[in-house]
Image (tube, rainbow, N blue to C red; front, side, top):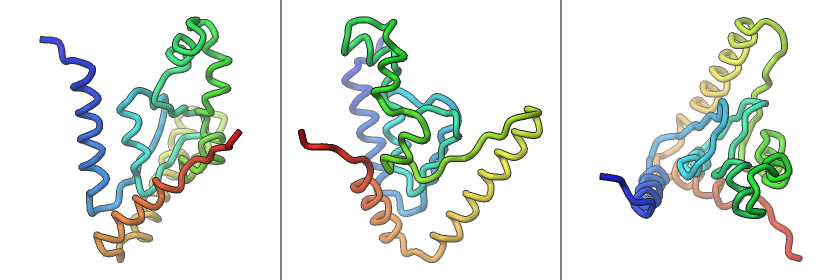
Amino acid sequence: MEQKKEDNGEAIASSMLKMASLKVPIIAIVIGEGSSGGALALGLGNKVLMLENAIYSILSPEGYASILWKDSSKAKEAAEKMKLTAKDLYDLKVIDKIIQEPDGDKEESFKKIVQSLKKEINDTAKEMQNMEPEMIVEHRYQKFRNMGEYKVL
């Protein structure tokens, strides 16, 4: 039996509600292409890290172009408008840190990325280890409330 889209949306919302109330630190890491409704939950992390060349959005550029212009071939133009790169999202305060991806040997680059991620995870754990559970939840709430920016036209 096929699950209805409304059920998926409700499941995502319910999961996010539970996640928001967790009394332990949440560290979210975007390592590739974080898209779809489930990507919303990543924004609830106390700390959100993103690899330099990853993208993060609730909708693919093709999907956005199809909705906005009824033409998925305008995906490149859509991607620019969506602000889904690590730099864009850092500037909008959606993510907390960009993890650089070094050029060169893939195995060596992978090791450097893993070291950077390990350091960030350890630093965040140390930073939050003495926080009361209620303060961890409040930290997450305030971070979520302060992300992004908008302009009144």
